Length: 453
Image 1 (cartoon, one colour):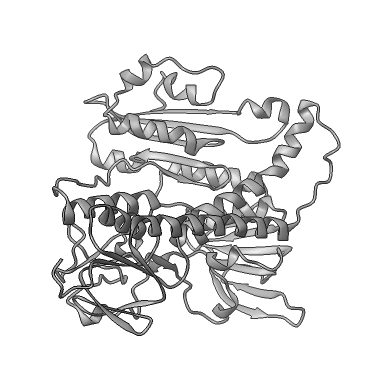
Image 2 (spheres, rainbow, N blue to C red):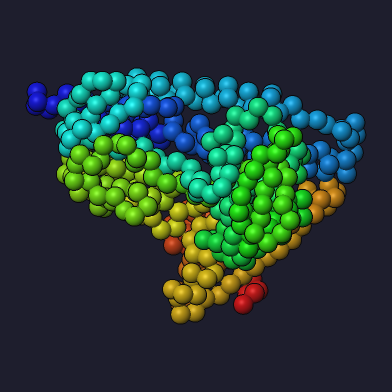
């Protein structure tokens, strides 16, 4: 590095992607800085995947208590939830993870700045009132929840605030049809809150396989979530009692203690100073980058949720490794955005990799679809209504499995292995030749012989 620069790489944002890029660059002997204004670990660690999964676990215990009776357990007829204990134990765990991220940065040799960084020019970063010159600037500022403006929208909260509620409401309204909405509807319902899920469209999880999405909707309704499709909120007003009155477009007003808007996330690019560079933003505010994550400004790069390609933590980490190889390595690494395994921790749970049936029919001349639907073994004595649905989609011409989907318990854990199989180009014949693990739900993926259609 020439003396004209303070840093080889200045990373704005200490989420999963930014921290990975900083650590890897520092390990290659580069002088690196990281600036973070909010919390180490980004959305995932603090107000995303990690605390959400802890809340999902918490919300599943009532069903396990119920099932245990069929297995001879007694004395658990009326368990009660102490919300404050759950909330605060979650916060303690997140603070532990914050500390790990702090140590990762420290041990890498990178400098960590606690403060908001802005860009003053192609090579200039301002943080805590001081300007630093950087050869390369990496924007890894993630996304932020979006709540549309309408009468009373100030009374709604986003997923960020859900993790820190003073107390659980008796009734909650969740607005949205994507994964965050269905996950929080399941959490609130499982924690004993009367939960209403409101979505303006006709189908939940519309970007996923339709048959699987329908199974999730049916499962949520069976567990007690009140699902209102083709429905919108016109206005929210606060009543004298402190409750919120929710006016809907097509039915009677609804009273709720909480209204959660999970209506998407937007790239966190506002007031970042990108206008001081040649960086181009797309219509939704995301940063436009090329295959090497370079913006229209040659010294400025971006990755993760802020470029709005695939908003998943492991994808941001992979992008960071590709970027560092491009900047300081051999430049051969690439990221493949196809066949990325995905889970939605709704209840029932969804795991998926590859194409949904609708996509497959649009892309392939002839496909075979295999479906299995059954009651999980736990419920034979547990007395619950849960079911498991599994689905394989096969390209008839090549026999390759091009889609693998599951709704039900342990879907995420099972689909991870299926992701390897699809990445390796497994055929239906490979699945058929694999011996199942008995008794398990997963074995159903290798015993499906009869085409559903």
